[in-house]
Amino acid sequence: MAHHRIFRILAVAAVVAPTAFLAAPAAAADGVAKIGVFLPLTGENAENGQQIRKAVELYVNEYNQQKHAHKIELLVRDDRGEPKTATNIAREFAQDKDLIAAVGSFTSTAAMAAAPILDKAGIPQISPTSSHPDFTGLAKYAFRGTPTQSIEADRIADYVADKLGGKTAAIVYRQDDWGNSAAKVFRKSFEAKGGTIVAAEAVAPDTRDLRTLVTVLKEKNPDSVYVALHYASAAVLAQRMKAAGWNPKVITSTALYTHQLVELAGNDAVENWHVPAFFFAESKEPVVQNFVAAYKKAYDQTPNAFGAVGYDSIAMIGTALDDVPGSGTEGRKALGDKLFEVQVRGTTGQMKFDANGDIDKTITWLEIKGGKFVQAP
Image 1 (cartoon, helix red, strand yellow):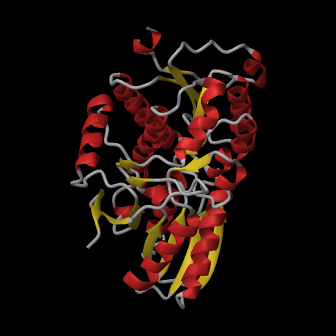
Image 2 (cartoon, rainbow, N blue to C red; image 1 turned 30 degrees about the horizontal axis):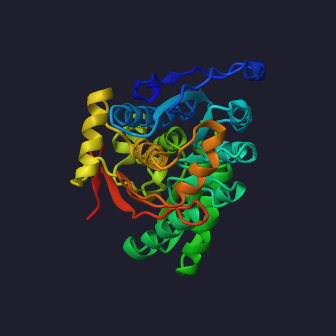
Image 3 (cartoon, one colour; image 1 turned 180 degrees about the vertical axis):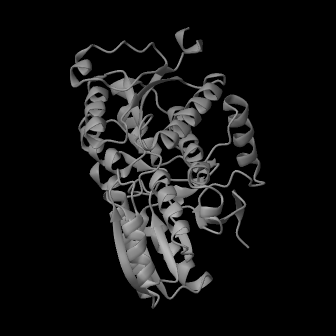
């Protein structure tokens, strides 16, 4: 029967123009669960998007070699982290009657732009990394693989105040939905702990010259700096701080547990930075060790936290699919309902969505020492 066949993964290049969406999609075979994936595979966050793509494909290859009710087929799109492109891709997915679910995007802004369109089509959507609190409220079947900034930034503020003894802090954040949310929650939580925010500076995604910003912050002389940026901008910030001879305690968001930060900034520039993570590649947990070994074997590369949460997110769909009788449009509602019920012991911790599609996980605190991430004492 058709469902015993191994189906190939469709890796599709970046969307060129909206007119490309008018082409009729190829029909999925019986017993195939077709899942759309949209991520930044090029552009500023390409490394993070590629990590998720590789992890998702790794899971699907493993899944399709096992006995399940369906075989999974992926339709991969490059949204470049842009909300407009993500919107166009969501429209394409909505027109594809064979598609049962969507994974994406990496950024909160892109994931949120796609959510209403996917919701109208009844397509369950899991964003592995969207942490903006509003995301899951945009659709009935919108889920996230990472805690909201209401949880993450609050716990980071606690760490700065309680563990590091921070009294004054500056915030440097990405000027988008995710960054604004992180900055807002950190400020509120840090001030509630008795701390003082001496400055909060937004950084546009395409900004590469941060000398003035560093000069301004250095004059404010905070004992701590909370950095809610992606790796490219954070690396520039680290280099400018080093050039200015300024060395406060730096605490980042979970987005910066990536070796790209160290490679771009240089070891010395990010030495002693404090980095929270929901995944640690050197963990002794068997589920983590098995994933890391398989990822390294497949790609000759160590996975970062985004790859790990991508793997866990697609695992939620794979687990739920075993109890979904239909595929395509016929299976969307059943899959969406089932995603609220399933649990997976993942590489990033226990995966279980609450009634809103949100999730909670435990933070592991890391420090950068000699160019490597090590567990904080």
